[in-house]
Image 1 (tube, rainbow, N blue to C red):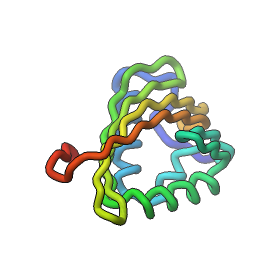
Image 2: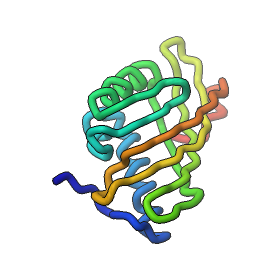
Image 3: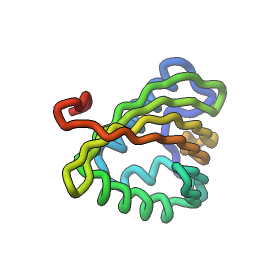
Length: 137
């Protein structure tokens, strides 16, 4: 049985730890590594895309990081209860033409008893920025 501590129900400390672990994993830009934090049948909504299962997660993340170059992410816990969390995030990236963006959003997470994320719903907006206006490096 796959497990990814810390496990729900979360405390303030374990919720913050879970968010930091997610930030660290996503900043590797490694779809295989990131996908292991999710249940095999995970459900996602990311912008207008609906993604089901780890294989689709890996394919999605591969496409994402081929487009969003030099991606750097920061997450912040907004709240939690039992096995659910609300997370705010922002990340910066540039496209192949060199245009930089800051993407902002909120995520709702739900975990199973083994600490794997079974649901992830993300709402995201992009803002074109100048390279010198970047905050995340």
